[in-house]
Image (cartoon, rainbow, N blue to C red):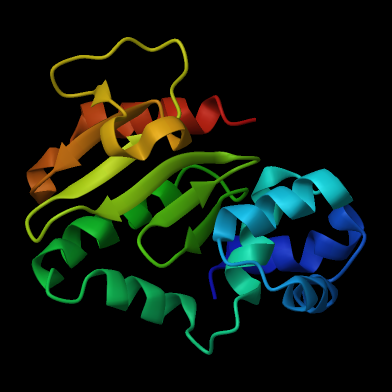
Length: 180
């Protein structure tokens, strides 16, 4: 398990009032059909921050699928994109110890206090990297969020390792710094 995720789980009782196991029991009694419904429930009914709520829901799903299997499932038939994903994760981990990497069914959320980057294998040849970069203008490369809707403000389409250049890293670093 990722160190940042383990730290978040360890801090959960202090920060949210309950352990992951206790939250899982609460959510299983409610049986939400959508991830977002469960997140909104935790936020509105229990005043859990979005980052913790999202992580609790993702980890409490009735599934024996570890995080690595969620990522593997995302890239099934898209294995040529895995080196890009791995390089993005490696870079993100250099930003600080307060990052949580949360794989979901179709994407991976990168969270500080809130999500600041979203990695999604969009096609067999492209990863869409979503950003939360409020007040940052779009460019030819740093596009409007597109399919991410309100989850992100911008996106960059990545098709090769060469796309992970200094400009992209700076946008990731900026999104990280704005996520406090």
